[in-house]
Length: 93
Image 1 (cartoon, one colour):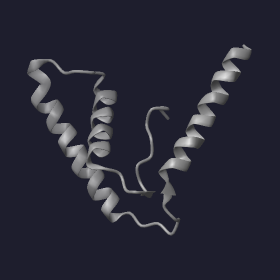
Image 2 (cartoon, rainbow, N blue to C red):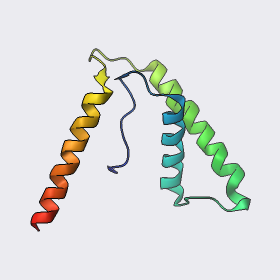
Image 3 (cartoon, rainbow, N blue to C red):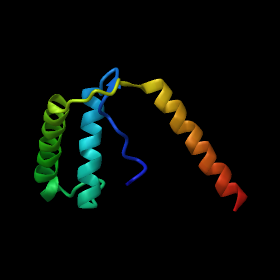
Image 4 (cartoon, helix red, strand yellow):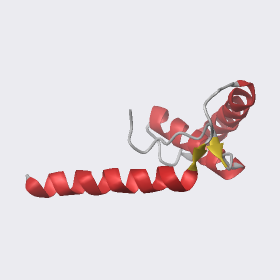
């Protein structure tokens, strides 16, 4: 899995519309290989981003979990620690 893809479901507070928009854009960029589409491809590119946003929102509203929501701050600290460990391992090489 791509390290840049971050879970957005089951967090407190919930994922914002902006986070969902960015996730949809990232997904479409990844599968098309375009960072920025050409003029001729802008309409289908951004239409796909909009459709993926709707799918994500529908998915999140229909998912059910018994797990308690994850704390954003705690998860961010854990990610930072993991990043620092990776950097330390790279320095050892």
